[in-house]
Length: 599
Image (cartoon, rainbow, N blue to C red; front, side, top):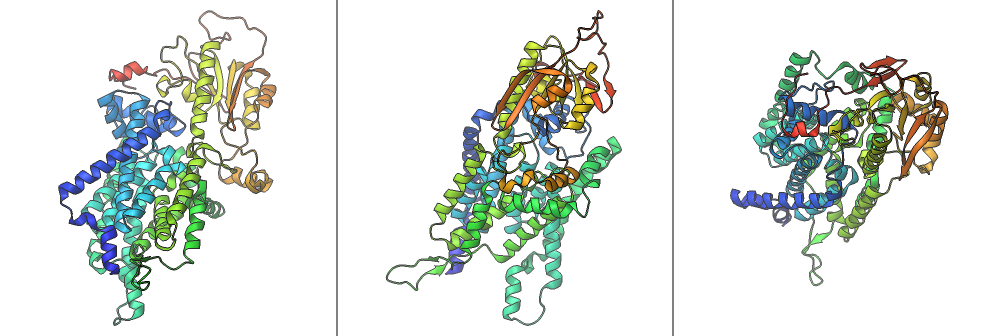
C-alpha cells in the first residue's frame, strides 16, 4: 500500500499522454508567470541595480549592439553568455527598456519555479510541490532575484529541471538541462559533477555480499543499480562549458576572466582562515537566512514525531499506512549537490552573496517541507507561518548585515539614487562629481536609467573605492579635481545588531581582512573632511544619500574648459582617484533603433 501511495502522490504524470503533460506544464508556467508579474508590478520599471548596472546589463547591451558575446564596454568576467543572449533577444524583439529586461527575467523565474514544482512532485508529491514552490517564490532572496538581470537564478532554475530529469532517470534530458545551467553560470556545473562523484562512490562501496538488512539499507541510500550506466552522462555538461572557455581564451587571452576578477574571486579567497568563516556564513544562508531558521527548526522538531498515517479512520485505527518520505537515494543525491556548493562557495568568491546558493536553498526547503508533510499534523499551518515570515523579511530589514539585493532594500537604494541623480542634473549639470561605484556608472551611462539621455552637459566623475576614512582622505587631498560629491551608504548597518556582533571590534577586523568590509563615514563627517556643505540629504529605511557642494574660492574660468576652469577632455588619475567619463555612451533611442558602434 505504501508503494501505491507513493505512486499516487508523485508519479502521476508518466501515465498521462505527452500532449496532456505539456498542456499542464504550460498552464502552470502561465500561472507562475502571471503571479510573478502581478507581485513585481511596482518594480518593473526600476533602473538597474548594482551588479546589473556594473556587468550583466552592459554585457547584454554589447551583445545586442555588436553581436559579440565578449563584452567591450567592461572587462570580461568570463561568465557564459546564455542569460545575456536571452536579454539581447528580448530587446531585439520588444525594444530596449528596463520593463522588457525585467519581464524577460521574470519569464526565466517562472520557468525555474515550474522546474522546482516538477522536481518536488516527482521526488515527493503534489501537496509538497505546491507548498515548496510557494515558499521559494516568496523567499526574499528568490523573490528579488526574479526580476534582476543576473545569472544565478536562471542557473538554479535549469538545475531544478536537470535534477527532475535525474530523479526520473532521463539521462539525455539531464544533460540538456545541466548544460543550459552551466551556460547560464559556470558554477552550475557543480551539480552534475557532484552527482557523478556520488554515482562513482556508489559503484565502489555497494555491498557485494548476500542479501542482508545492511545491504538493503545501502540499496535505499545508494543510486539505483540500473542507473550506473548513465553516470558518464553527468560529465557531458562540462563539454559546452569548456567550449565557451576555449572561445573566451581565444578572444581575450584570459581563461577565467580578467586578472582582477580572478584575483578577487579565487586567488584572494583560498585562505585556510577564511574558508571556515565563509562556511559558517554559507550554512547560515542555507538554514537560517531571512526566516529559514523557522523552517529548519520546525523540520528538526518534526523529526521527533512519528510519521502521519494515511487511510486511518476512527473505526480502523490500525488500517493507516505511514506517509512516505522522499526516497533516501534522492535525498542522498540532493545532499551531494548541497555539500558541493557549500564546499566550493566557501572557498571561492570574494563576496559571500546569498544568491550564489540559490541552486541548493530550494532543495533544503523541499526536504524540510516534505518532512513536515510526513510527520506534522498541522503542517500547512507551519508552512503558512514560514511564508508570512518570508514576506515580512521582504519588507523589513533583519537585525544583521545583509546584501541590499536580498530583499526590497534594493528598491530603496534605487529610489534614493534616482532622486539624487535628478537633483544633480537640475542643480549641478556638467559638474565634476566625486562618487564611488556603482553611482559612477549611474551618472555616466544614461541607458542605466538614472539620468536623462538628453542631458545637455554630461557629468565627469572622479571615482573613489568607497566612503571610508582612508578613501575620503585621498579625495580631500585632490579637492581641485571635483566640484560636488555624491555620497551614499554602500552597506546596510543594522541600528540594533543581533547580539551586538556587528559592534565587536574583533569581528570587524575579521570582515575587513577577509570579506572586504568597510564602514562608511556619515554625510556630515564627509562634508567636514572634504571642506563642503550638504546640499541634499535623504534617508530611507537605514540607507542614505547626500550631495555635498565643495566650497572653494572662485577660480578664473578658461573658455572651453570645465566648470572650474580646468580642461576635462581626458580621464585623469591621481592618488588612487580616477576621473571617469563615458565618451561613447549611447542614448536609449539609439539602442531602440539597433544602432551599432565599433569600439
